[in-house]
Amino acid sequence: MSGKTLRFIKNGQCVQLDNVPADRMLLEIIREDLHCTGTKEGCGEGDCGACTVVLANLEQGQLSFRAVNSCIRFAHSIEGQALFTVEDLQGVDGQLHPVQQAMVDQHATQCGFCTPGFIMSLFGMYQNTTLNDQLISRAQAETALAGNLCRCTGYRPILDAAQQLHHYPKQLIATEPLVGALNACKAQRTPEDSVYLQPESLADLLNQRARHPDAQLIAGSTDVGLWINKLHRRTERVIDVSQTHELRQIKASSEQLFIGAAVPLSDAFREIANYWPALAPFLNRFAGLPIRQSATLGGNIANGSPIGDTMPLLIAMNASLHLQSVRGSRVMPIEEFFLGYRKTLLGPDEVITAISIPLPPDSKARNAAAESQATRGFFLDAFKISKRFDDDISAVCLAIGIELHGGSVRQVSIGVGGVAATPVKAARTEAALRGQPWTQPTIDAAATALEAEFTPISDMRASARYRQSVMKNLLRRFWLQTQRQYSTLNTSSTSNTSTSNIDSDRPSQITMPALRVEKGVSH
Ligand SMILES: Cc1cc2nc3c(=O)[nH]c(=O)nc-3n(C[C@H](O)[C@H](O)[C@H](O)COP(=O)(O)OP(=O)(O)OC[C@H]3O[C@@H](n4cnc5c(N)ncnc54)[C@H](O)[C@@H]3O)c2cc1C
Ligand code: FES
Ligand code: FES
Image 1 (cartoon, rainbow, N blue to C red):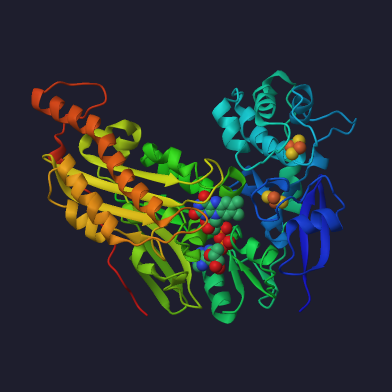
Image 2: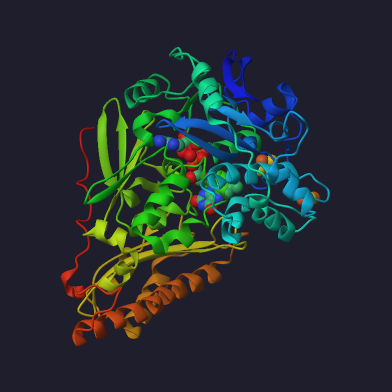
């Protein structure tokens, strides 16, 4: 099957490449067709960041700049977008861009192989932050660079360079010409038998999926890209959901947060952390920023890896999964989607359209005074154990949501990863906790139940014994975490003391949100 024409903006110009195969990777066209060899290939699997480039696109009328890994990105996915590689940063007079100059001034490069990737991650951050005249904090620089590996300079001077950027004259990409170029280079409507389909509406997506059940469906391709590069799988036709309008939406009502399956994780996580700020450290541990700016919830769930990080959390949150095909739609508790090792309920003509998460009652007020959620008897947290802190896959992941009422467990929901063939709900452990006093003996009994509930395997990430111990210890850690906040609450309630971050409501007056949407529709 022949390829398809690809159009995108590079250095202000609309570039057209003809006959690009469906499964050609962005890094390949950058180096081999555009001859921009500044962008390097290190690992070819999204881990090292040497291939990082920045994509700019109009999203709801706003320009967004995102650093992404070009090695695992399908070339056609950038149709109609602007591509920036390290060659595009230098001014016409040869003057270095501030991120390049800062790296030089801080001696932040040695062999240089990793450097273009660092430069592009910094450039993405620069475009998105210095616009508001903010100084770059160490934490912000670390987040922006967590997807880049350097093996000879060391990170200190690179992070220093990031924090020195405000000392240099500003050099932001001019918005108007870029928006003009993006509008002028807009994609033509793709014929239905094209090798790379990028439907813009859900109706088109469902029709194309029904018509081409053998096509490779992708969203951010942070899993599928590895199947192409490392397993040498070929695919003649791709259906890319990343531009499907309905799948890119985030909506919230007073009862639930509704996240489209193709929303990039960076946006989805920002929204989740708005409602549950305590989850932010956990969410930041998912890969590095360039992966989170491509990857999606839909992709993580459909891939169904037992060590995927979002599923344990979504199980603990009592989230529901929305599936749709031309035949109809269905909604199910997320844990029921997984049938066995990488086996799911997804039909060949179906797609995941969204994930809905029940919000705690009074969530708007909670959002405004986020810390109050911990003082009202409702607690939610998630923990990831991996060998490396940044950009690593979990050995064990445990998430737990609990509602306490008069010192006892009224409702509890626990999701675990890394201990079975699929992400799992710890139903027997939940049963051991429900209705019991929230005390050490209860948590000891629950830890024993948790140990008995799963039989993890030993592999390169961890031994079975380690997984068992860690799982139990995470449960205990969660209990310890809640002690101070909950006892503060009880003291405050009984003594009627008012403090700035404690609500006057007694915990017994708080209930968990209505749990989930009814299961099943037409099929
Ligand atoms: C360097 C690196 C680090 C990573 N770190 C983590 C980590 O910390 N934690 C973690 O859990 N994962 C991690 N991953 C794995 C990966 O990033 C996630 O699984 C990600 O969420 C996949 O989303 P995607 O949109 O890229 O999926 P894709 O690769 O596009 O697709 C994955 C699968 O989902 C299917 N799919 C995608 N969207 C839909 C949809 N809407 N409906 C039906 N099927 C769909 C595809 O057909 C495919 O089978 C990492 C990957 C890399 C390369
Ligand atoms: S080459 Fe290593 S992340 Fe792309
Ligand atoms: S400068 Fe050599 S790997 Fe980073």
